[in-house]
Image 1 (tube, rainbow, N blue to C red):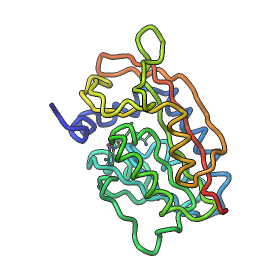
Image 2 (cartoon, helix red, strand yellow):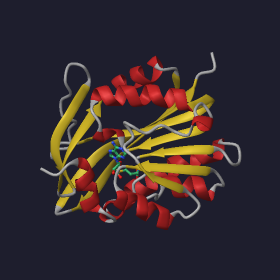
Image 3 (cartoon, rainbow, N blue to C red):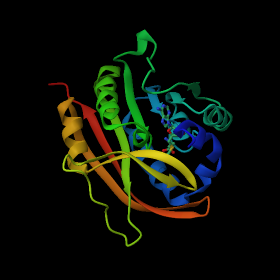
Image 4 (cartoon, helix red, strand yellow):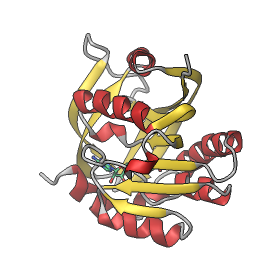
Length: 226
Ligand SMILES: C[S@@+](CC[C@H](N)C(=O)[O-])C[C@H]1O[C@@H](n2cnc3c(N)ncnc32)[C@H](O)[C@@H]1O
């Protein structure tokens, strides 16, 4: 079975084209956040994919964007599509920002990229985000759940998570982790990220001979200054 990294290399640009609704939803959230930041804010885009729309939106608004992704294909595509951003091939689980930027990011966006790590790794990533973000900075988590063919939400484990589920997405085998809104909220609060807003939408994806409806949510938080 290919790894998540190989699966995304196979998907290449088709991911960006798989759902215009997804791009529009994500762009609207990013435009709202970009407008909340002072000019020239340092923004970290975790699992940047093609660079569109997340890095593109923050770069257009005049912010300094760094995107990381473990797929070289995605990093190259993002750099081509968003020349003002800086893109680095890195696995988020190992990535360490430059020492002078630790605690200095004004925004960290993980849009639909924490699906690809386990629950334990998700907890560690959220903890690391709180170390990297400055007080009052914005952390945004884009997450969701693939709905069953009858449109219902599949059952979660008692813990409120579904850890490392093997499935297919746009015709590629991937391993994905899902959580209920309650477990996400608890996790973010545990690390001092105060919930500002949740923006949820059901989004249809088409590609690789498959159609999926994903109930997508963006949890917009700020690092508490208390
Ligand atoms: C569904 S795409 C989302 C892309 C973009 N953030 C967006 O919302 O449009 C997920 C991205 O996360 C990347 N990714 C998954 N696991 C990763 C990891 N451990 N480290 C870095 N990138 C990862 C994938 O290569 C892919 O480009």
